[in-house]
Structures are given as C-alpha cells and as structure tokens.
Image 1: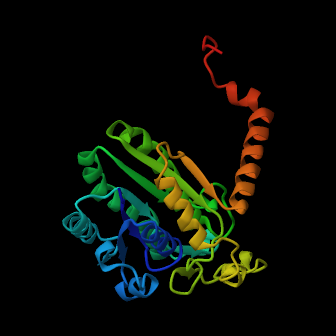
Image 2: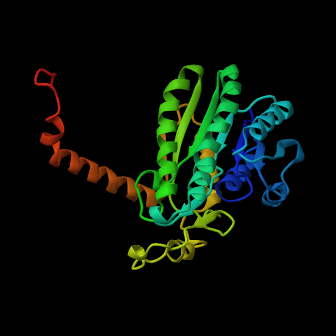
Image 3: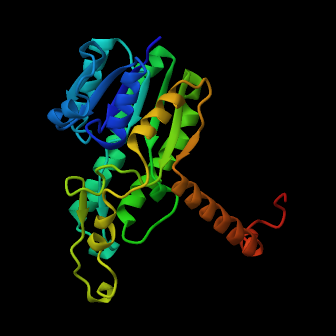
Length: 281
C-alpha cells in the first residue's frame, strides 16, 4: 500500500529530493513550504492525484494545523512526517543579532515542535506512523561560528530521542536523521543569515560569511540519493533510532565518540568523587 508523506521545506534540497523519491516509489506527498511556486517547479511532472502542495510557514502554528487538516482531507492519513524545513545563522556568538538567534530557534526548533504537535494526534489515532526529524552533523559536534545553528540542532537531537520513547507505545517510530554536508540551499543567500563583524577581538578570524559561503554548491552529499535513503527507511519494519547520512558525518561521530570516551576515562575519578560514600558502584 502506498504511503502518505508530509514533507516540510519541500521546495528544494533534502525535502524536494525526498518528495521526488517518494512520488517515484508510488507514494503520495503533501509538500509544505512558504513558496508554492518553488515547490511546483521542484516537483514538476508529479501525478496530480499523488501530490498536494500547501503554502504554510512552520513557525506559525495555525498555518501548520490548517496544512495538516488539508492533508487529512485529501488523503485521509499521514504515514511519514519529514521535519526538514530550516535555515542557518552563522557568526561568532557575541556578534549575533538577538533577533537572528530567535529566528533560528523559531525555524529549526519551534517549527519542528509545531509540526509534531499537529501530526502526532493523527498518528496516535492511526496507531501508526514514522517521524523523521532532520538534525545535522552540527547537532553532533559544536563548530565555531555556528553556535546558534548548532544549538538548535542539539535541541532537535534531545527532543527526538526523548519523544521516540513517549510515542513508541502508539506504534509511532521516530528517527533522528543526522545528515552531513548536502548540496542544498542551506548556505544560499535565501536561507542563511550572517553576523556582521562588530567586536575587534574577533577581527583576526575569517568572517563567517567568508568561511561558509564558498562551501555553497560544493557539498559532497546528493539530495536525490538522500531522498532514496529516506524512502528505504520508511519501508523498514524497525527503522533505526539514529541514522547518520553521509561519510563526513560518520567521521564527525567517530571523532566525538572517541573524545567523549577519552575525557570520561581521564577524569573518571574526579567525576565519581561527587557520589555519596554509600552509593552502589
């Protein structure tokens, strides 16, 4: 039986790649985004009876709930939610404009939460569903000049791993997806915000714009192949709790895991010195 996908940020990148892969597999897709024209161009040629394009901003809860209601009205169910919409704010933490920090959380964290709160009641009634929350290599390891972005992706990691335990009894599976660097619009001018250098003590550093902007269009990851992997995951009876996607993010995970083990072993005596004397070992 074909699945019904609900995909945010479906006009480009990982969202569009997954939507195309799902449609190719014979599934139905609800494609969400602020710019419906962009989605139409990205999914041109899709069967009209298999695609519903909905204009909505994930940071506006009322729009999200209306979009979910439209999906149910059209297809009757939602089998897979891909929480993909997001953006990036880059720069040294002290130099970030506070409105940009708030925007980063509104899109990358609260947007995910709005979708979850709208879709979970549907999946609980169905007693089935799969949620794919997109994190990042930046949610595994902190990187300089991506403090706000990384903070939001670490938040998605914690949210996803805890939520998975809460909803498993209802037949709902939640997967934390950790992509590496994919050739998406994340670093395009339309999706990224850079801090303006303003503090002399950081003047010796390459600016965030000069460090990140040249990467745009050179990332090693292919969004079309990513989409194919998501469709494969959706077909598994027992999907993974955490899925790293891309060789580069596997390297990040290896580095972080090694460092944590080394630091834990090095300071084990200090760490355990806070226990009561009668605490079991």
